[in-house]
Length: 118
Image 1 (cartoon, helix red, strand yellow):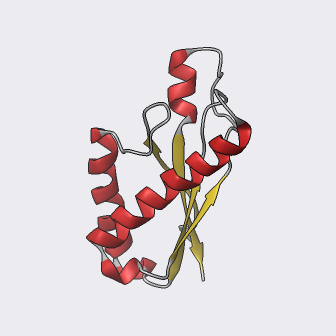
Image 2 (tube, rainbow, N blue to C red):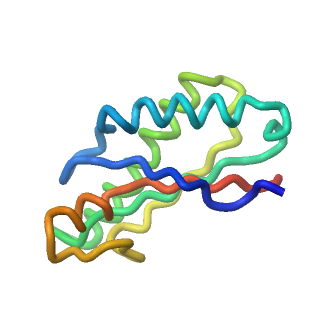
C-alpha cells in the first residue's frame, strides 16, 4: 500500500515562500501521480519546515506559508484535491541537514509530502 512520505521535497529560498523552478516541475509530477485513480481516496498532508535562522515563531509561520503555497498550486492544477490537502508548519524542527552551512539550510527549507488513506 503506497501511503506515507513521498521521496519529494519542495525547496525554497531563504525567507521566501516562492517555489524554485525544479519544485514547480516536481509539483506537476506530484499532481499527475495523485491523479491516478488508486489515490483518489487518499488525502495529502504537506509539512513545511524552515532553517533555524531568525525568530522561531516567524519560522513556524513561514514554514506553514510554504506548505500553503504548495497546497494552493496543487489545487490550481487539480481541483479535485480541494478539501483533501492538509498543511502543517514545523519551522526549524526536524532538520534533515546541518543549519551550520548554506547547503544544509537550503535542504531544511522544504515542504514534505505525505499520502494518507482517508
